[in-house]
Amino acid sequence: MKILFRTLLLGTYNLLFPVFLLVSLPGYLIKMKRRGGFGTGLLERFGIYRKPAAQEPQGGLYIHAVSVGEAFIALKFIREWNKTHDEPVILATSTATGHEVVRKAAIPNVRPLYAPLDLPGLSGRCLDRFKPRAVALIEAELWPNFAEACHRRGIPLLMLNARLSPRSEGRYAAIRPVTALLFSRLDALAAQNGTDARRFAHIGINPFIIHETGSIKFDVLGDAPTAPRDEFRMLLNYLRQDKPVVLAASTHAGEEALIAKAIRTAGAFPLIVPRHAERRAEVVQDLTAAGFSPILRTAGELPDEVPQNACYVADTTGELRDWTALADVVVIGKSFLASGGQNPVEAIAARIPVITGPDMTNFADLVRLLESHAGICRCMQDQLPLHISRLLEHSESTARQVENAFNALKVHSGATRRSVQLVDSFYRRSTGQA
Image (cartoon, rainbow, N blue to C red; front, side):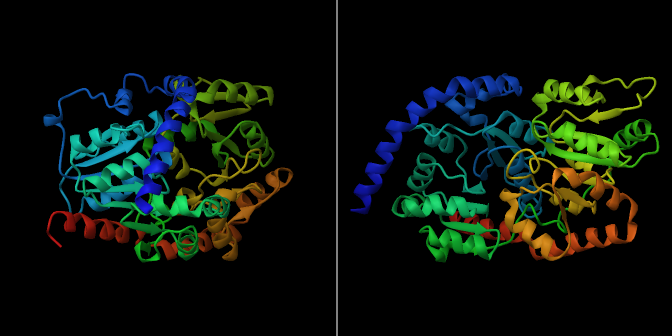
């Protein structure tokens, strides 16, 4: 009965997914063109590769990461993995921005790859090409055909850094038999915390395969920020005119002008890093309308004289960590005029005080942890100038918030190493080394 149910579900999925793909493909291709995906190997998503399979790295670890955030988690995992392994790593992403992050990291044994679309035959073609000993999925990204292809080939399939929001838990629980069947192809699931572990068990995942490892993303002690680039420091020193720098991180539509005005009111210099660099024209228009003279990083040259209401827009991908290390305060985007919030951990790791807006739904567990330790400031948009000023002026209370936040995340210390050990146990088993 279980085999019949699986066959029916997979057959239904394979009838419906191509229809969805045909409808969404034009928009996807437009987005990829806008984000610079053309000419970077995008045809790999359709099973078309540039060189023969015999010239590809084989017999290593395959990691699937969707976009930029997951790619950074994967790269962090790989750096720890490489301390004990010298086999090749295939790092597959679904987006052009994620692919660019992997390519720029330039880790010698890593092959950047566009993940195959989950159409019948493409996943198997990809796995046969690289012949991985194990597959690791970053966060809750599990595709039916890909999971089946791994199962048929006896390749261990693990999910790392997995988290499940209450909303997603409700959706999965409503179709528990389907969810349980899909996730049954996993050999192991590494949950970020006990709450996530319980949520995954509730939606039908075998509790015996669930491991509580902590969050790789929140493993700040194992990922100390590097020293800021001298180029960035010199650039900001020129632009800031002795003012403190406040970073608006991963902003969404309308937030650039909102946060920049609050920063100006607080007497600081606005440094803006939009979540999507391709929005640069919209960002410039909004900031100009708000009375600013925006200077784009992609414009290259700096003005001979800094305008009175200058602000700097880092309209690039993969540089947020470098800018964060140079800020005096970080304001988290997608939390004021959009919903869900963005990840504040990079700022906490760099020991920079953090302010968020009221909506941090996507990081609810993290924010609760930080708030319980008085390690983060949340406010409404009209209160933002006041809180920026407070963090810039009250050094003792600011330092206390910074240390509280850092200490609150110690629970995740070692998560990267524990995740590597979990994957390695299956990796060795598949090669007879266990």
